[in-house]
Length: 471
Image (cartoon, rainbow, N blue to C red):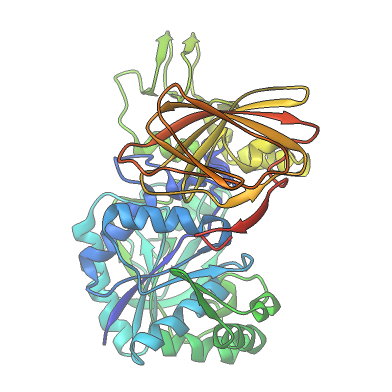
């Protein structure tokens, strides 16, 4: 049987705000190494699977996923774009249909794209054990042997009373348990029969679809129809809109809690879902005072804290047990024991339609990025970067004119019927209503300053006529 990695890359990582944003969530950040969390997951999958991965992500993240895969030299078999997030059960069902298109008897190694595993050899051994069980028809999850009474994770109750301390072979699942309170978590730890629910699985694609149809037939039908209606767009696979008829439900609720084929492989592999700033602190190197500092940080009398400076100097004096995270447009200060509530703050940002919920000042596009550096009444200033060989869409604006000043590299500018080549310290003017395009024909990243002037300066004031990215 062919083992195919399935990478779930659609999360938002809201508890790691302000670093993680809706358009640039935590899986695309290099949090704990030189590689992003997604790239680490792809590398980990490649170490145990010979097959190219199936990746499932959101529409807004498609170019981020593709670019990070290319930077790693990783090629996918399918890059599936969910028209709207529907939780893990429908996403894995889409992947199962894609895997069966590769091999009818395919097995799926399902991995979230934003987890940390510090002991890859132990993980590889657990995958081998899980594969044996899946080849016999089991739907296998990976249970992490608990090292403390943790209230931030769900648990898996097993049929083996000492599985958390002994065997790494697959055992039957008795039940899935929600996040417990402290007293219940201590009971689970003492019993030896409970494991942390990692959210990683090894499943036969056909077996999963059979159990999904058995226990959630409406979901199974919606996804099957959506996959059949799907189409290829550039490097991406777009399911049909029938996918929106699928209920939003996790694989645990939809299948694993109901099937009689659920099994779990206990594993101790240095796992963390990096689901909060306190988890980031635990996973990071600390000094003798229990601090982790990153960026331009000056600390006096500071203990047990996580301080991250992305854009400016951050100073702390006489504080303890804090999380301080600074970005160009937002600062988070939280008690390390209450960082799970960062999500409540993010919910308020979303409800208030704040831009800080959606994106950073630097917004990434398939051609490069732009960053707002200043604005006032009827004007806005941006720094634009265009990667070598890339170009923006042919477009025009109804409500603004633009001034472009090249500060680095070479710009190829289409303005109406003329084409201009600009180099460092040269500029041009794009009148309101004129079709225009910016490209980089050079080998260096093109950087320019764009000054927008007009009555309305929103990003939705763009009429596209041609676009190599299919937008």
